[in-house]
Image 1: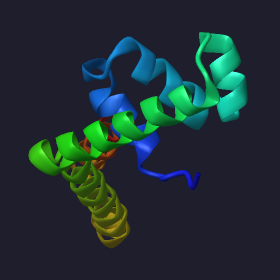
Image 2: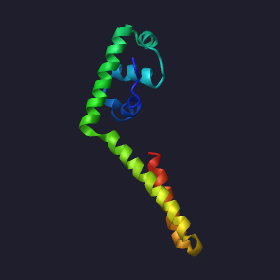
Image 3: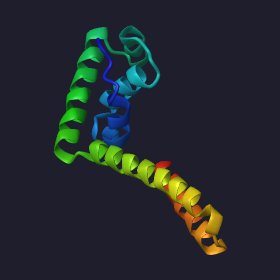
Length: 120
């Protein structure tokens, strides 16, 4: 079974919507890197049952993302925040020779705000 790199992020966004067994199965598989047999043993399910739970959970997560698009929006926002941060550094370099304390303070606040938003 190939692991989809998007699943851990989708699980963070939509995991509470999954059934308890689906959430536990997919979490153990993707985030804890356990094998299907190990997950089955931990959850008292067969290897095939775990496989089916993970597949159903993956399908549900992809359907939710297709409908709601939260991950796509999050990634666009994060990309924009990185661009804003890059521009503030560039602006800071351009105004340094003539910088007053207000501009430096404002740029620092912008960078701090961007950092806070990126860490959400």
